Image (tube, rainbow, N blue to C red; front, top):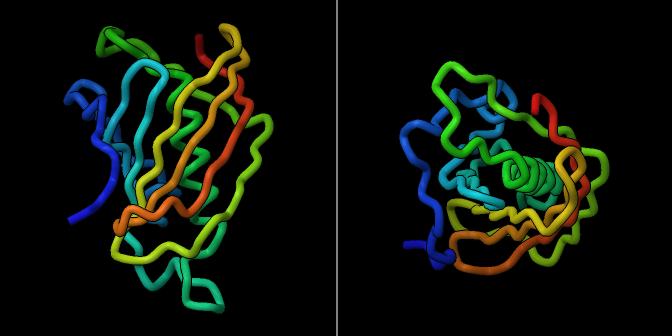
Length: 145
């Protein structure tokens, strides 16, 4: 059982999309998406380990980056055949707080401001024991709008 915060925007069926090749490689997936919010979950597997046996910081950064980027481009009620808005990372800072323990990690990203094209976000990453293991802030560009 995980000690994560409740998911305020569970992923609705019309928002499901295929995982990117990179998401598939690392094993993380979108599990919540709403206005100014996104949530990703990643199982902690052996292939994510660094020399110390903990998940590599790049795995933390990847899931935080995705959560922040998705948080700024929620498509809402777009028609099924409409192109989905995408995001591009312009700047990102990650703060590593603790090694992740347990069997999974979860990142929540939130849009904190900005305009139509450039937006600002923050994210938090927890392990399945409920420990906050990393935080991040970022600046992104919305694309395809």
